[in-house]
Image 1 (cartoon, rainbow, N blue to C red):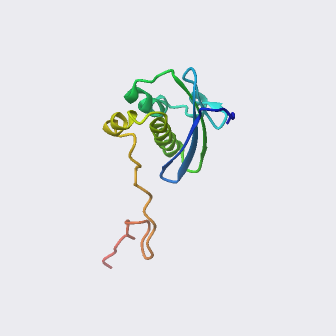
Image 2: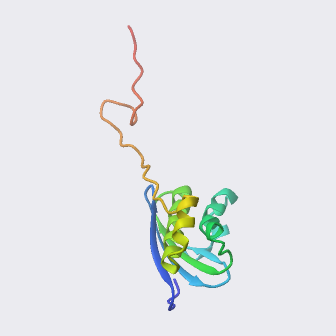
Length: 132
């Protein structure tokens, strides 16, 4: 992440992924782990997740994003980056909060993987019952 003044840093989490994002005024480039976002996230549907906070606040192309992501899979990492971008935009301007909240990108998704229970095959799946 390049050190710059008037940058806003935020943290986002989703499942087991953690993203640290630096938001700086720029031209709209997004780098994830020092790689352009379209190379790091190959699926277009996942790439579009990153732009939802900018679409909600109508700030496309005004900020560059430098994200460091750790843990989880691609979907969880994209959700973590999205939340971190939304939080950084709130630091940029408090007037963005209502629009981001209405778009649903400011809420941390609490869903996590349920732990496996003893005596079961997975968290809820049971072993097959045999009558005889």
